[in-house]
Image (tube, rainbow, N blue to C red; front, side, top):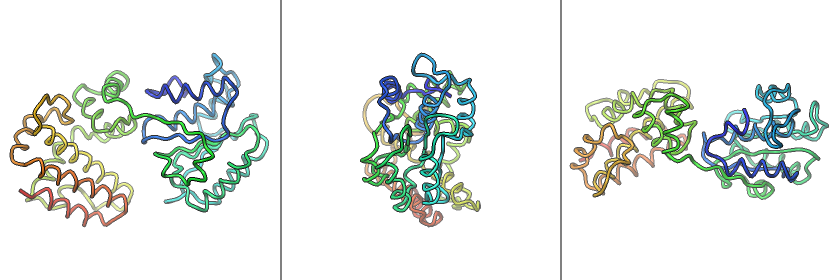
Length: 327
C-alpha cells in the first residue's frame, strides 16, 4: 500500500506529500469525508512515509522494507490503530495510546496514532486525547478519520489540520470497477451510481451481489400481499448485521423512487440508477404524482434515520411499507 494506490484523492495526497517534502508535518490531522473513499489507506500510506527506511522519489514509501511490511500488516510498534470497543472508543484505550505516543520510538524516530472511527470518541476519551493534542511529543503524528468535523468535539477539531476527501465521480467509479475489478458494464454503472461515490461501498455491494438481488428487493417491498419477513429477513441476531441488510434494501428502494421522480420530469433520462429497468420505471411513474413519489422518498429517508437511532426495525419497516403501499 502506497499513495499510488489511492484513487481519486489527488488533492489530499498532494497536500500530505508537500508537507513531508517541506518538513512541515502537522502533529495532528483530521481526514474528513464519506466512508470507502480512501481515507484509511491514505492514513496508512502517510504513516509509512514517515517510518519507511527507503523513501522513493522523496514522497513515496518503498513498500518493500521491513518497516513498510510491518505497517501493512498492522504490526509496526510505532504505528498504533485505535478502534471503538462497542459503540464508543474507551478512555483506557486512548490513555494507553497516548502513553505509548509519549515514549521514544521502538523502531523509528516517528510515532503515529491513527483513529479510523474518530466519531466514536465520547467526551471522556476526547478529553483524554486533548492533553496530547495540546502538548504533543516531538516527532509524533495523530490522524483522526471521520465523516465530518461536526462528529468531533470542537476542542479536538480545532487542534487538527483538516484534509478533505472527495466522493468519486460516478463516471470515474464506473471505469475503476470495470477496468480494475472486472465488474460487468451494467453492474458497474449501477454500483457506481448507487454507492454515492464510495469505492468501498461499491465493492461491498458487489460482494453482496446486490445487482443480482435489487429487482427482487423492489418487487417484494412493493408487493402488499407479502408479509414483512418476505421483504427482508429480520431473524438474524446480530444487530449490526441486520441494520446493514436493512440499509442496503433502503438504498435500493430510494434509488427506485429517485428514478421514478426523474422519469416524471421532461428531458433525457440517461442518468437513471436502475438503467436496466428504465421502461418499468416510466410505466410505474405514470401511476404516481410527483408529490406521491416525494412522500415515499421522504418516508425511506425517515426510516434510515430511525434505523440509525436503533429504533425497533420491525416497527420502522412496517410504517414504511404502509407508505409504499399507498395509491
